[in-house]
Length: 266
Image 1: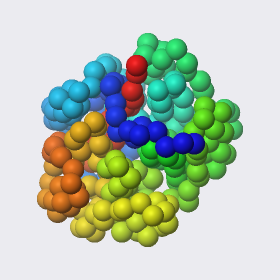
Image 2 (image 1 turned 90 degrees about the vertical axis):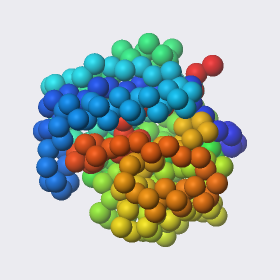
Image 3 (image 1 turned 120 degrees about the vertical axis):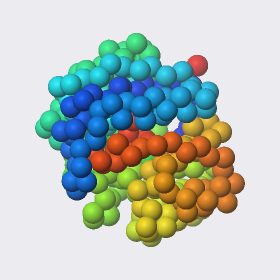
Image 4 (image 1 turned 60 degrees about the vertical axis):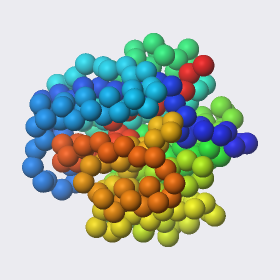
């Protein structure tokens, strides 16, 4: 795959979903208390505003009380300029989310395909760079799903690589993000993994590992609120930033990338 400048951060559109009150029952690795639906929605509104201010058209889907984790729309689908791929999340309670988001995908894309049967992939395990798409194996993404997904991407002309996510990392993008221009933001363990080749890597201070999940949106990097050392590291690397609160999302293992599907049309 020839490098496609800006593939990883130049976007025109996003799809989001309003958090439901049932998010209090969402999945989490460590219980630090239940998120509050109303507070989460207030933070979500600020998130949407930040995307819009960065130049994106944002589709906001209604909340789904039957699916506590459904505001994390990145996991059941993956979008590229050519079309969308409906994924198959690796947790049983989230299996119906793909069906629920299908209409929104079809409203924006003429091509929407399903992940081939036989495996699972969470979108949180997929890191798009300008010259390769990395797919991390995790408790939510298995090898059968990752290899099937990689095969679809290769049919579409993209280079894809399957990676062994380091132990203890929930999703691949829990521990790394692209800042654009070949620069990666990553936790120390992810930076030492060798996944990123000779790219420049900005290391997240160990006390701020959560802040490894940021999103570059056009000319600005959205950074979670409350992580000043990581914020300064990103600024020092030459990137414009905007701080966005994710306090409620964090209680159910969510971060900035999880809350939207970002893509470029036209």
